[in-house]
Length: 488
Image (cartoon, rainbow, N blue to C red; front, side, top):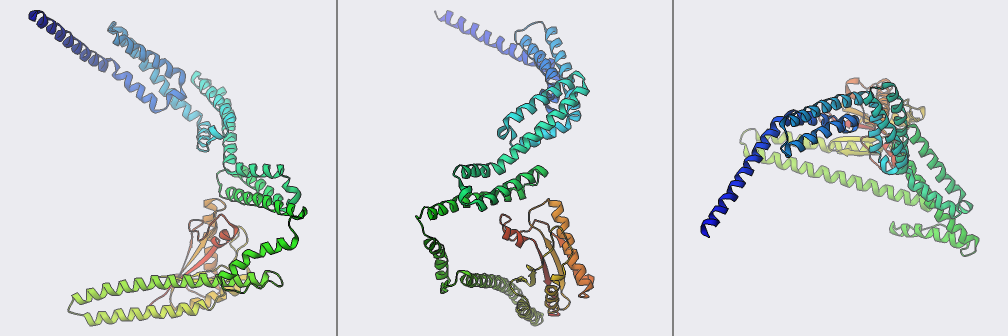
């Protein structure tokens, strides 16, 4: 019995060794006969031959799989070699056809990618499907060598891809607005709030027109859609109020009193008597003045805090360095004191400049030792860089401010909002900065070596571009005065 068990173990071990040897041999054969086929397959995959040359690719894969199957079953090695060689030939053909197709059908391929980026397969599935069919027809004609029909199909596919892309972009930006307006129409909002609802529809139409004209500059259409959404929701709110008044659930007097209540609450926070005996205009003006003063005081406090922190850090650092040295300490301390005195003078001059401008003409603030004149009252015509004569008085005040800082360096910065193309905004901001620079040279007699004009386009907003007021603040000229501390 023991002898039989030993013999059985020997047989099992022998079979295992033979199997292992057979597997090793098969691996070596595969490396030998599939080396070229694997390389050709990888090269075809690299140019996406499965998409751009599907017939040749599929033929290559058929021969490749047959060679693998023959090798797996231990068939005649010549058959394996033959199928692998055929696979190489088909893969090479597929690679060449795919490269040609990518060149010949470049326009459709780009449109296809743009559509995919805009999520057209999900947001415009029918048009996308039609475009895909035409694109595959173009590829099949290319693979047959029929360039004429391939180009025809490419033109059709390109048109469909672009249409699908535009539908998808509109769906992304305008769908919510359309749903709101549809709901408003069902609720007969137009009967009770026609002005506000009409404004929402006009904004939607303008947003759609902007997308039709330039689908890739979506800042303005998105902003218009946001405004349209607001107006549509506002119309729904107003229509409900008007209904209540019409149905006598709310009297006109109650309506006015309800609307006055929020202003009373705000006035209470500002500690202002809410006097509205002749309407809200006087109270509104008081509140605006109050909050403007609060904003200016906060800005001044923040600037002073930052200046004090920087000054304290500088003094501590320099004093430590001076204490570590024995020689020349008194002279360097004197230089430090002189610089601190110069900075104090700059602060006094800053306060002098602040008084030159009203809040409607310029915002004056500091960044370190630099003085910033944000000319909120300097306006240009749309798309124009020419200074209007209406701005000459403001620029005369700018000249007075510059004179407070003798021999200072001046940088004129041009800025725009985000509406319009990036390149156009950059060019316009540069032209406006240069226009102010030229005015300073000609009218103020400031030497050119003191002046630098720089356009930043839409890259440095100071407010949100989602509101008209924010965009107005972003369209600006900043004059940066860098004082000469020795001359201050």
